[in-house]
View 1 (spheres, one colour):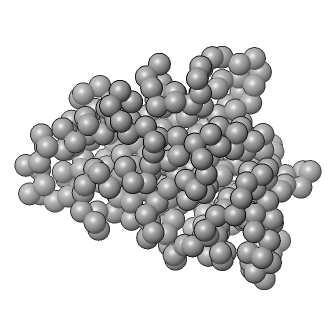
View 2 (spheres, rainbow, N blue to C red):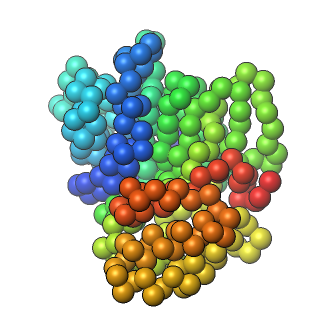
View 3 (cartoon, one colour):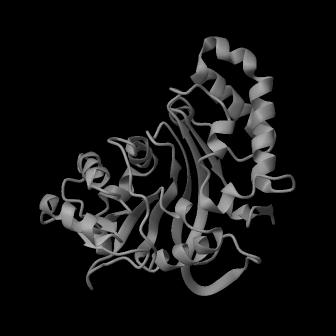
Length: 285
């Protein structure tokens, strides 16, 4: 399921994504109980060569040396080119949103970056629903878009759960025994090399938000509130962009947004907007 993407990437483009996961939930990468013992990290849509998958393997295996990793590409020529890098715990297979797993395999973490951005918005929910069937309860997917060098990105953080559906749709309700995603957070990331301009994040919003930056939409209201917060805390920039970024986040939280204010995030340029299940199709429930 799916279609080939442009596939262009750069070395270390997704380093900040991996570093975020390593700080956000290292226990998920290290789990060995039950089915997690052999569950995979999946790099979905790794591009024209295997560099992002291999870079992730090096980072994640610092805390779990035996972590199985699967790079998935819909373009079979890209898979053939990556196969020389495969080994007993590093795999490359042709596939799409219907992941090419073997019968005894399951998934703990999916990273899908710069993939769904190239599809239509109507494809967002079916892609998520398809991917959900492969992930163990408690597993994660980080899905989003970055600029070409990974210095700025925005991503959905989705948690695999039983019996609840918080994907954007016309309506939202409890499901009976369903296996799907809870939208846990929307994560904004910058390394400050391009400064700190909130508008830059709009260009890399995930597919479920990118077309909703318009009056009356929740994501529009969020950006307007963040701009006001940045203006109100602008004196802090004399101490540096990181201090200004953190001050704007604290001001934004004071406006009622559920922002994670732990210094370990803000000091590194990550703003985590929690409680995303309250946003459906871009509108407040």
